[in-house]
Length: 371
Image (cartoon, rainbow, N blue to C red; front, side, top):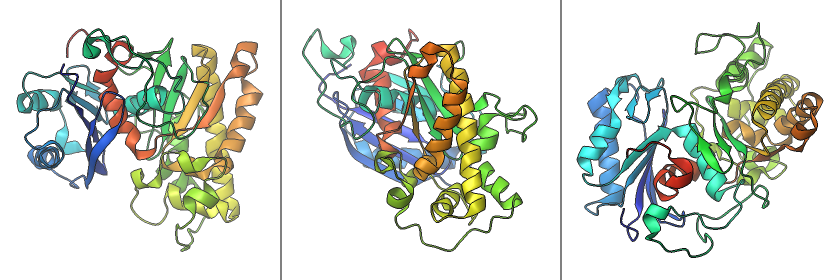
């Protein structure tokens, strides 16, 4: 891989497509975001992505292509079937990108995994030191990472962590001993499907009581409506300040979190900050579910750190306080008590930075022997 050229990073979601160029230190340039075509068929979606890549990269060939995309997918082959983009059911995304950019590596992973990777490499889990892949730096054993910018979290870093996204869904990625853990199908770290209420609400996966079924923004808002919540008409101004207490200004921003209608997770967080009793109860419900899931994951994986980003994390202490209370009540083993839970640091750029890291720091974050 050419050490002098940037990596083309792509982040594909149900509400937006994003692309940008990332240099070998994690610095992001030329990032562009466009709406995902609602109800688009396979070729309409591909054309939107192709036009976006023309705008970002033009005729300049990248050193490689890294992609984060919603699942499920066949991994590492990169045949994707995002649940929120039915037009791409069984779409050979990696193959199409490899045809467009011949001769360079193309790597694809789950979008939540890419966010976790980014937080470990450049965000709240960052510990500094040499962050470049041996295969890229051509034998250079030079020093520290100077790019990307750690904008929050804890400077101690963490070699064992889970990076979470709590937004329209709940996803995550697992880092152990400083390396991404993929599991047998690339789905390790899927914390959204830990059971937190065995007789709880039905989940999109077909089960009941999953963390995602309880704590994802739309489900939480629906629960609040069932309890009598009436969304206010107050503007969102100040959401990342007033609502985003406890350092939430650095968390994954609401710009990356969109829902249709008025009864949304973002509105729920704003109303909770304004003192609405039902909205506050909903935040406690979500915080308790997150605390239970994190306690279970901590005992299983012996982790040091959990980072939480996504739109619902904008609720700040309204979410994090009940999370911490529940976590400390259930993480009782001595080794589990050390776990820290902090806001994610990289905001809406995390998906792009993590996608690029699949190539730029492949010795940590890419286990397959193929591109």
